[in-house]
Amino acid sequence: MRILFLFQIFDYKKSTIYLDLVRECRDRGHMVTVIAGTSDMELPDGVTEVEGIRTVYMKLPDQFGAGSVKKALIQMSIPGRIRMILKDGFKDETFDVIAYPTPPITLAPVLRYCAKRYKSAIRYLMLKDIFPQNAVDLGMFSKSSPIYKYYRRMERQLYAYSDRIGCMSEANIAYLKEHDPEIPNEKLEYFPNTVALNEAVSMKDTRAANGLRIVFGGNMGKPQDIGGLLKGIKTCGEQPDLDRVFFYFIGDGTESRRIEEYIEREKPVNLTYRHQLERPEYEKLLANADVGMISLSKDFTIPNFPSRILSYMQISKPVFAVLDEATDMDECIAEAGCGISVRAGDTGAFVEGVRRLIQLKDKLPEMGARGRRYLERYFNVGVSVDILERAYRG
Image 1 (tube, helix red, strand yellow):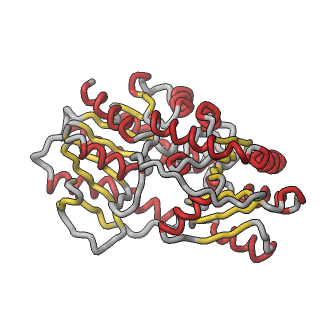
Image 2 (image 1 turned 180 degrees about the horizontal axis):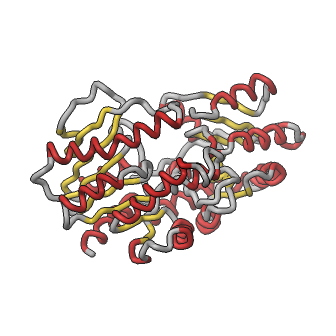
Image 3 (image 1 turned 45 degrees about the vertical axis):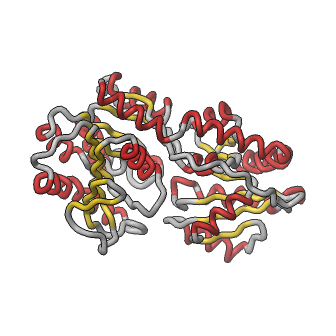
């Protein structure tokens, strides 16, 4: 196949589900082209080859920590820039599959162009964010605002110009069927988050005899309900029987300052926070932890399925998931037998979940091993490439 990937952000130096997907397509012998945004102004302009993959970079301002207005303006500029790249560098090309994730949802104009230019290509949406509803859930704007109406129109156009819509879970599919009934059912299919499998390694057990170490790594933003996590951690610190439970936050985001202010104010002994660690140091911390944690805001009405769980499954770590009511990730965790989940926004449930982990401490390694086996079967990157290949074959 000749596959064109369109990404808002892409980096060959950072391990992501998209880098794994692109490499797997290449390794299967497909001709892969990537058009992607980057804030690294030192990368070459024009068409270049990276790791045997034809690549074109769009130089974009750094969006990390940028305000919502700046992010919106950047994302609105992406379709026009992709269209110009295609016109200038790929006017005589043909593609079999054009694949692109959300975010952004502003790609409808370039997809309209692709529908005319590459008539036989399958346009495949890898749906990761259901926007703008997720922004409404987090209180960023209301459904009555012009901003919502604009983005909702763009979202519907994105769905209309996509031949297939790959959803992260069955709950995602059900949500779209309910809220966007104009989408033909045959467009919707399961397309899970997947990763390239690293060699399973057996880590030396360095856990404290009577303690529990819980790591929470990645983005620290509103979707992760940092405030709710801090309440749970504070309450754990007030329980005499949980005095050997320690939480480690590693990552950055819009809620970073809130974590720092909490630590300055409360001076907790059970929470350590670092904005970032060198990858070897982070991997060592994670390998020596007992549990990896996931958190979603209780306010979500859309079903999220964070890819963070795959990082824990990859290295056979059991999962402590603090989840909203809309997601079906708890069903996945229960089926895999790789951890426990509690309801977000319920501090008492959070504390009892931690107690449950302590009770299960001797069984945590096996829970982690079950997660690894589940990953190998259902979340390895080959599953995603199989789906793209089936889409092409029809």
